[in-house]
Length: 182
Image (cartoon, rainbow, N blue to C red; front, side, top):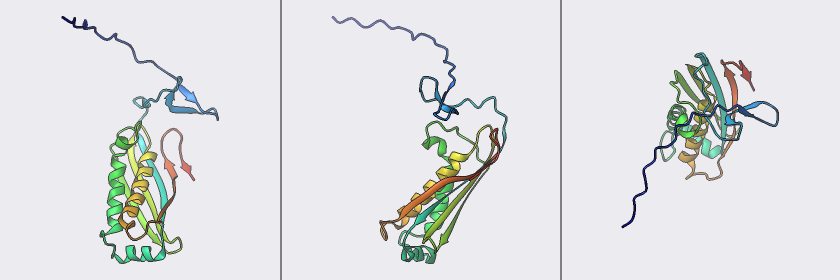
């Protein structure tokens, strides 16, 4: 007859307080502890302030494909309307996609898509606003990324060579680090 292993209670441990690791430039990497472990930043002591982030990116395609989008004749339907909604939805779900992001009650998300014959393609810009203890840069970048991906998805049957380029933060307001403009 085999013996059952004895049940043991796990030892109670206090969470270790670790200092952020330093990058090669000497600035703190807030999502990495001193021993290199990933961690979610504690923002509980930070005041809730109004914060805004704006990001943009481009979807480059042929003029013929852009004309198809602008005319509203894409086989899958309203490319720009669908992509705009996808970007807004993505901003709201950023904490589910990026592991160490805080869930935030966003107060405003706008996604603007401008067809540009000079690219040719679409310029995508997202603006995200919150009153809270942490910024919304990741939400703005996620909105732009998913908007661009949705445009690609809606037109890939027509053109496989579409490129997504230049996704970046262009402005950030609020918080301890203040105003940033690219």
